Amino acid sequence: MSSNDPRPEDQLPETPLDHTPSPEGPSTGKRLAAEALGTFVLVFGSISAALFAADFGIGAGGTSLGIGFVGVALAFGLTVVAGVYAWGPISGGHFNPAVTLGLAAAGRFPWKDTVGYIIAQIIGGAVGTSIIVLIGLSGPDGWLSRARASGFASNGFGDQSPGGFGIGAAIIAEIVFTAVFVLVILGATHAARGTKLAGLAIGLTLTLIHLASIPIDNTSVNPARSIATAIYGGGDALAQLWVFIVFPIVGGLIAGFANRALFDRAR
Image (cartoon, rainbow, N blue to C red; front, top):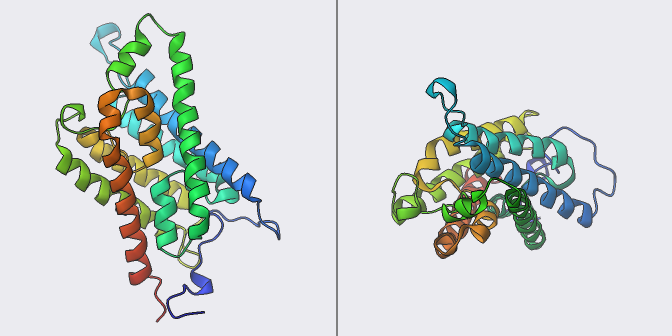
């Protein structure tokens, strides 16, 4: 073992949860299926909240019936909590290419397995938004066309930003918020210093990130989520998609390498 290799006690457990895997561990197929299913739940649940419930209308007395930014932020956090506790024991519960690459950069996940995980995550997310489209086909007259015309909850900057923020703001936000997210994951799931409540800590962190950054660029920190919505978000969403693929990954890699140098380096 070289001096740059992480120590055995610093290796990430198969999952942040306390469980006893079988001697062989889950097969590759099971792990990829878990990643696809977890990403599906994340995208389907959170984007459904954004499209169906965020701005549902006004009820009696002028009270809003929508869940707003706060509700959407909670939806993202809750779906991650559910996925981590349900399928984390199988795959580790990444559900996000930036997380997978960040864990690899930190020495907590094999680089050779990253491509399969990322493909599974993208497929799971795309299935999630595709089912939303199927629901929309039977929705109120014009609902689906309006949802697509408004970007289908895609990420964006400039005219596509909820708050009118430019590309520079989107780049900085995606790098910094993704790095924070990955650092929390690495700390909460550490074999020696982690916590059995890692799933809750991770979900609450994602909620906080959305509360802070939805007005900036509709919050990505997850290329699979961004790809899934851009598929149906139209030309502007697709044209700006590269920002929400590249810079969350940059943030995840920065966090992974920094965590390894600061906290997991052999003393």
